[in-house]
Length: 215
Ligand code: SAH
Image (cartoon, rainbow, N blue to C red; front, side, top):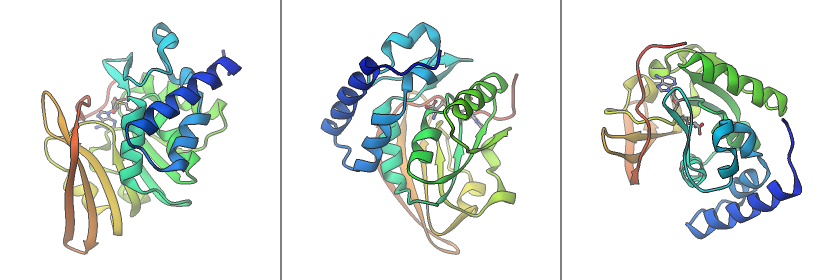
């Protein structure tokens, strides 16, 4: 049911204050989290926990990211209005909605068909219009690039070279790097044709980026 009540709005306000207290400063991101009905992106079994600052299962062994993590990755990405943003791992579509609220033009890829279809349905119902792609995002989406920003929402062992090459000059890639049990949040800025500046921003736990597709 597509219902957003005053109670949901109240819970979102609290969530925003929680995330603010954890160090997120960008008001545009906090506003986005304050307005997006996260409960509509959740699996029905966990709907009562929608405004907890935690990750939850969304089916297919995947998770909707913790709101703080969504905010943190988005802050590192420094998204500007009208930026062309490539997102690898649509999942629930919640992070996609945050990017769209910031005025970005979003190209999002998901490898699991059930999640892909579900995210497409909810984002469309809410009036969000990213460009959806079903497939393995490991190689990025060269024909739609280059991109101002690239966001990977699953963990990789090594930063895919193809993604680095799809960044515009001055472009930013945010990607969790490392295997079990967790990753370092890595931010890569393209300084020139072959010049990339890499910085690390703390430990997080993501599901792994997987090869190929599944139904
Ligand atoms: N931002 C999403 C995170 C979902 S978890 C959210 O908050 O809901 C990561 C997602 O990446 C999963 O849905 C998983 O299926 C997807 N994924 C994993 N490997 C992928 C790949 N190679 N290409 C595209 N999507 C991938």
